Length: 289
Ligand code: HEM
Ligand SMILES: OCc1cnc2cc[nH]c2c1
Image (cartoon, rainbow, N blue to C red; front, side):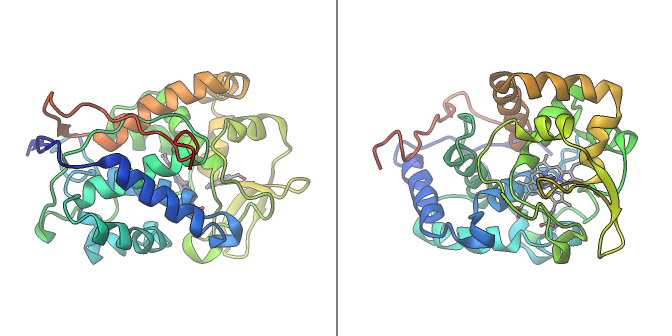
């Protein structure tokens, strides 16, 4: 089924929604050991989009189906309920906003407020009923290597370069043992969007360890950082490694490529009317707030 976005009315003020989310992020910055809500909002925007299947255009961000418990309780999304709860007050404040627009705008706002690149965002996703909830099992598992990651992203037609750029979002936040069976980083938790993920991958010493949930992860003792097996795969695989090096050496290139592939991710499967121009939101700082 083709998802055609609703034509934007000039009555809506999306910068106002952005500001409400960004202000709430500032007010609740002690969440998750002072990581704040940025990381979990970014992960939520990826999970609502990562259910997309190019073969039948099912799933994806359009219908906002994450709001239904079958999708919300996907075991691979454990912990994202915190992001959903954070957005509930925004949902109430702007009843004209669809859930698909809310979940994706949450991620865009979080990336920009954590000093990341400007993400051009288009509106018009339309809520779909519970019957349209995609099955669980469409999101990736963290336990495997490069072949798994490459074949997983074939469902999005993402190239090696796009996969490496997209995964740079793992500079943000942390793994929580009770959510995913992985844990860390244990200090210097990150809520600044930068190319540090690639730098760390290349420059630090990574030791494979079995964690308290019995899963193998890669730990760096000095900095207290960790990498999932799927993170470390980008270092192990020579085709991915080429792009890891490019992004470690050039943050502007990373920002440019991340913007492109993240926009693709949150818009997969959606036809936007030409009237729906991409919004380039100002950060609170740029508005002198
Ligand atoms: C191979 C693909 C991926 C796998 C297997 C994966 C897996 C995971 C796992 C296991 C966690 C820890 C969750 C927890 O314990 O709370 C996590 C966290 C996170 N992921 Fe991914 N992820 C993938 C791709 C992505 C993408 C494409 C993005 C965004 C563009 C993303 C953004 C995040 C963020 C921001 C966090 C931190 C969340 C927090 O601090 O609460 N991930 N990921
Ligand atoms: O240690 C940095 C780091 C590594 N991997 C992940 C995965 C999610 N957040 C992360 C943060």
